[in-house]
Image (cartoon, rainbow, N blue to C red; front, side, top):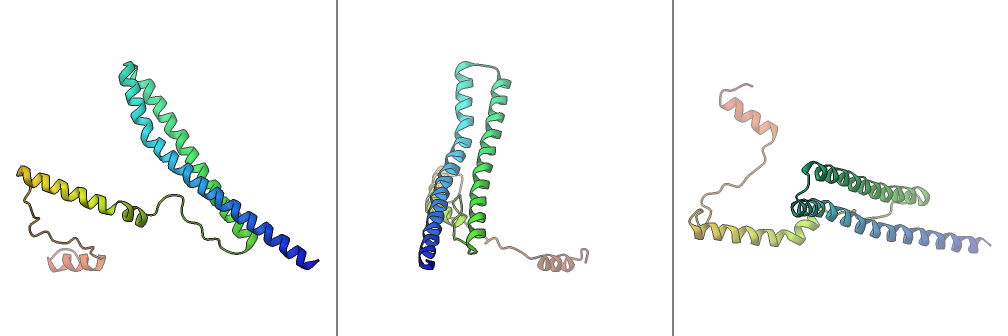
Length: 162
């Protein structure tokens, strides 16, 4: 009897985790669609307004209301995903390893880092060809972060406040 209950609980647990993971994947797609709609909506409304030569105020109001609705949708999806994760952690007593709803900064840099650096190099070459920018950057110093202690030492050395 105890063996049967254990297998039933294991089956229930695997179904719960499977449901949570599939819902999480769907929420990632929902977030991506909502973000794309945030980017596309202003362009679509601007094109419609330009083609119809309508009142600017009406389109501005429609745009603002749509942005608020999309933002509320995105917040709702994120809240639903987080509440499912917390409830699953509460029921199981373990912390499930879910990835984020949006790409992390490292994943974004990994995916687009080479593209961005290639575009920067193309822009630099085009500007150099036009005579606006030297071909090779001369004497660029690396940007370093200074701590508060370093900054206060610099100020006291210059005879400023201490």
